[in-house]
Amino acid sequence: MEIEELVQVAIAAAAEIKPESLVLLDLRGICSFTDRFLICSASSQRQVHAIADRIEEGLSARKARLHHREGYEEAKWILLDYGDLVIHIFDEETRAYYDLERLWRDAPRTRIIPPEA
Image (cartoon, rainbow, N blue to C red; front, top):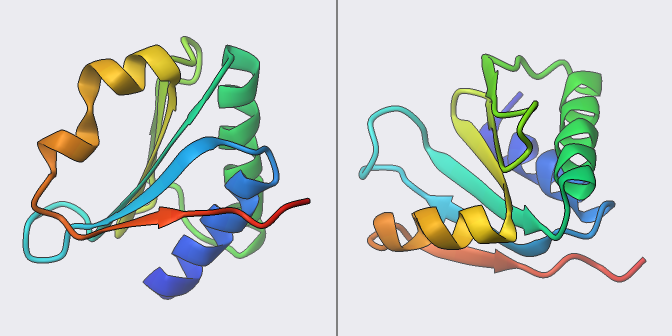
């Protein structure tokens, strides 16, 4: 699956669960281990799980390979590694604490506004 399709499927899947502040960082030329970060947050552990589950379902249906998943049990920060795309799903407090957008501030970013349901 091409990176742009991977990104679009992940965004559409996440949007179904209505995440907070969905942001795509373009890390090409900045980061050696991935091309894109998709970052979002949720107001509860249940919603963090639901977003991660929906993204995994959507990408699995397209035969995308999940290389690694971390943080599912705690549901404060779930990381889904699809190689060229790494997805970070935070609870609001953990996202503010780690502030990946500031850490990767040199990366071009796109704020995603999901369509209304």
